[in-house]
Image 1 (cartoon, rainbow, N blue to C red):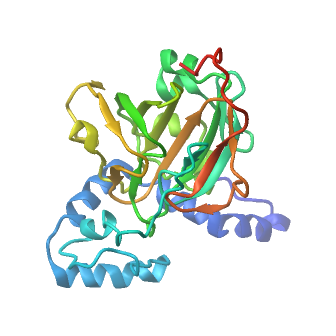
Image 2: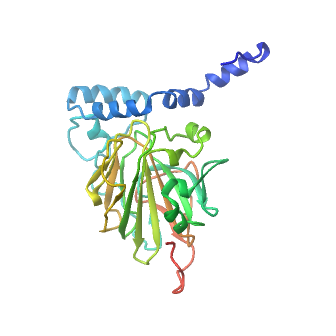
Image 3: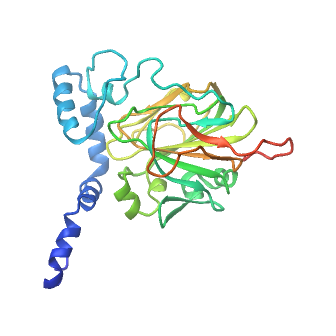
Length: 303
């Protein structure tokens, strides 16, 4: 790295040692795939003592709260990552004019898709063609989207946002960049470069929605119950996975094994619910989208 001018060295050092810059360097300028494989193996070691020690270290870096977790003993760190919750901990809004958040998350970029361009952060667009393929991109052109980031300490299971029929599951191999804000500001088309899945479903009104779970560094897998598959960097199965599953609002769809992101695409007849904005924390079951106008008989659903 070229040495900075003498007069500007303090400013340069401040930028280098800024927490956001350090976070980016430590989580992206490392052997990401290797670390992800190692984390997957480590998290599966069944040792209550090792698990307790790992949780103690984890709590030094994250606000881990297990108070709403279902009672039980954690034999491994994976058991903590994929923990279930006490019954009733995440009630789903029953209003049919609402689409619920599928997971606990921090809302990232959200709003309208312009043509087939969406945003991972301000000034950092990506094309739906690169995220989900050209055919699917056409179905969600000019739709609306919301980015939901799950931190490592959050509940990692995700659920159906409404009654729907899942009919498409497609897996995309890729990298495992961190998906936190420092990385999203610096790495172009990050979501399109990472390992991910495309889940498409039809609502009871005939409208199409899509969920795109995106893996990240240290995420060992994406579990999808409807296709009885655990999608990971070691997946050698088909790119397109046969699926035809009716799921009820709030039904569990799967889980991440660490923390990552889900991007949700909905028709333009839906708008973000009151109080939903970038930076807002949401919980699974909370109203995320609200129908902004009644669906007329001649409306053409997205897809």
